[in-house]
Length: 261
Image (cartoon, rainbow, N blue to C red; front, top):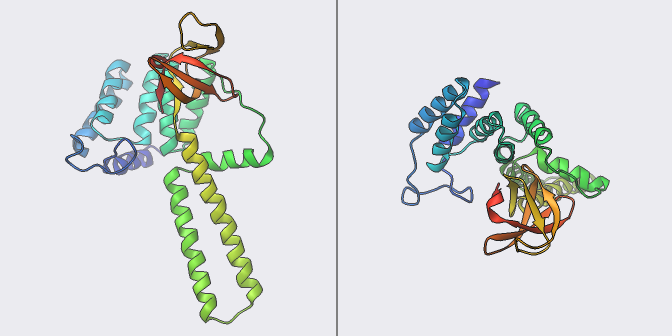
């Protein structure tokens, strides 16, 4: 499993990523080389084993500042913060890792363990069967995987449709195949949209805070926000941000208490 993660880390590092996940040109970023990133990654791993978590964090964050990222990198960074009992930033980096390697069992175990240690709020509104199924579906894949599957299904639909124009066969079978492929396509396209929407303006509280009714220090407190709580940023006003918790509660917190995923 470890060698597989290392290969995945090297593969992803080879592709420079911009803020939106797109490939950067040389003029757009002072991108560090794969060799330099790998050297810092190994150095960070050694520092982690020696218990020097501050140096490990510094090495991993230097790679990110250099324009390289991977799920394994975020995972190791999250582990380093976890060892320092900085659960908010640990969960933040686990969230970032889950976007790239959502099915990694070690990552998911550490993520839920960190949530339990932090006591982070994960209460959600009541979900019906369809929404529960869609949530599980969306979490299982990366966005790139869902888009790739959608493209593959579109191609199959086109092939089946063209074949039906030139080949003889049961019209009912052709319609059944096209219908089934279309249902899957709609499901994956809808899942892609849901995933993109869930990513938009998502953040994690990196420090404990109190959500106010208004964007003022002297305003009445509405509810508490624990480090590690996932929130949606609705709007910002000067040094404040209006947030929505997963259970639907909304309030104002200082912008310094959260970081975008």
